[in-house]
Amino acid sequence: MSGSLRISLTRRYRFAASHRLYNARFSEEENRRLYGKCCNPRGHGHNYTVEVTVCGPVDPATGMVANLGDLDPFVGREVIEAFDYKYLNEEVPAFRDRVPTTENLCREIYRRLKSFPAATLERIRVEETGQNSFEFAE
Image 1 (tube, rainbow, N blue to C red):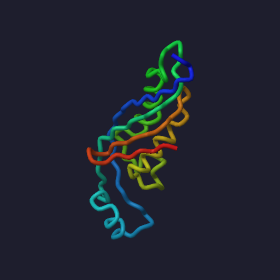
Image 2: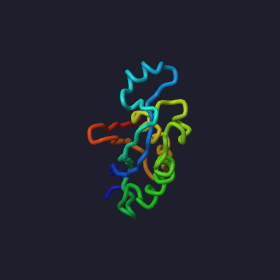
Image 3: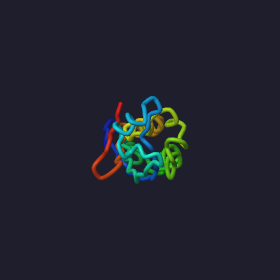
Image 4: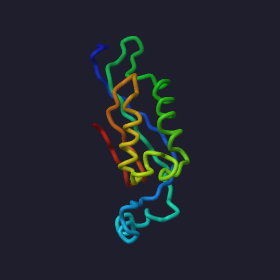
């Protein structure tokens, strides 16, 4: 295998979290109109699936783009520990002043993982439900 061969690796992770879609700059009526049932004052939860795609050259010695023994603890520390079983609006500082839509969650996960040292972060995909998924790539 050539050292210049670039391959992408996608790994899936899961976490559960709750949120409320609400913007303090809008009236209650406007929030209800924009966010519907997702504006419930008690919040609601999701079982999220996150796909992390990294790419890079294949290491000629290991035959890998990235060692999962490095990627898994990095994602665990930066994402799973930070979000799993959390109320995003109140327990995650990034969402205290930003609506925790899944679009914003996707961007925040990308921001947290782009410093992975062993390969280049290519994209993040977050599945919120069986019908909704979001992707972010720079």
